[in-house]
Length: 227
Length: 88
Image (cartoon, rainbow over all chains, first blue to last red; front, side, top):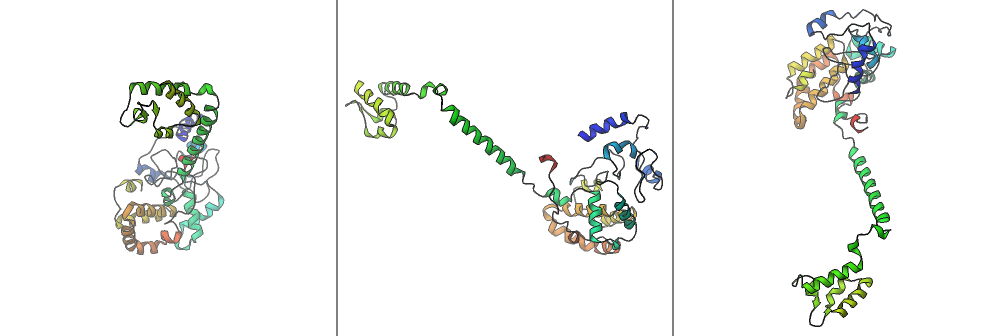
């Protein structure tokens, strides 16, 4: 889209140029004068290259590339849906001029290298290369992995370092009060916490040891003494 | 050529021959190869069935004009690795 924006500014820059009107196809085929050189101060057209009316208007945007199509804004793209854009890819050179004269003759005399240079002068990439996978997914996943790693680092280092960042429900006092409340209410008597508490002897059954660490086991003993 | 490429099918050999002759009249060899690439890729998943058939039909005219096949040019597979503009 940037080139289209630049093309909008080009007529303002070349104030003395007439506005380019898109001609219809029949007119373009008959009015092109292939032997006429460029009239304004741009580079003289080399022999074998096309001259197209309105070329000077777009030259600040395109450079010295040839306009090959007609009836549209010259804009180069590589795609399967628009395989032949309106401008060539490479700029005009002296070596290319000689190749173009060769091209006018018999095509059987062109070597493979000549053909390849002709192709690359007109097009940036082959259509097969357009279809080829780019491997960009690796970059995306890699960048995401790095960001996730940084996030985990930050949470583990900063989040757990200062007790100020801990929520209050994680402290042992809160958990002990919570278990005391739950046992008194006899919550989850079948599968949960009340089933692990022996109400006759006011103790926790041995399976409760799975959920305790060295720190909590002290507070559990106090709980059982309270009960 | 852009209109032919926009159509939903592989063009007939007669059309292809006319386009190649038009390229010859305009002295543009690169356009001919580009057009052949388009015709090949129009087959899509059935490229292995359509492309040899079309090469059979076009073969004589290609030898007349001196256009080399895509296999000789090495353009059936990607040649250079170019960075995709969307990924920059």
